[in-house]
Length: 321
Image (cartoon, rainbow, N blue to C red; front, side, top):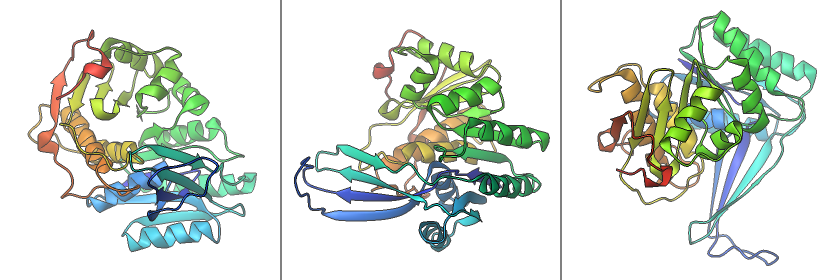
């Protein structure tokens, strides 16, 4: 089983327009409403592909209750703790040219008592010895990065591997602590973490090993695939070009794909299988509307190419299948 925690859950509202005109009245052509937050998205993708998972998150009586119901209807197990503040709505506006505009609410203010309840719930889930604890997404007001560091310490004490997918100063604090076994930044997030532009494969490798020397770093590169860096391994994986519908949540599906693999199958190693699966799930996700997660019929791992020790001098923008 994989446990995900989403400290700052959301409802993703995706609106489709012909053209977004700032300062004018815009009429939508379509609307999608999905339970979201990065950890919830990971759980949705895992569940849709037949993997046992449970999504843990704080929930208020109105918006949070809608998320619980929507997840149940999709067959996703959830475990929540009550909060007084209202769970946020995130608005995504997509125009006919595929341009995406996001408006994210900050989320509720979490009280110390609510933090304690969430921590206690996660401690109980760790006692069930899941294969992974995944902490993903932003933090609401009242929580700081030390919460994620504490979760990693608790996971390690129970022998549970810990994956973190967040950004900015929160990611910097968590990686500096050394508690994650895995992080999954995109290129821009790794550049922010490293404090410099990363133009080549070698730049990415060096930055990944600096920020998390003893763990696994999966760097998603959008249409240019993904790079996996460990202390003694470097892999690149890419998928043939796809027609994108929505990139929202694709990274979450990629992380779910990576974590879903427990056997190397026909690949040379489990790391090859994990990275190929991550790229296949992420590529499938971008072909689907809004924050729809891919299912088995959408995913084509056999189309993914995996390369050992890619040339360090290759520019990221030149990576392709």
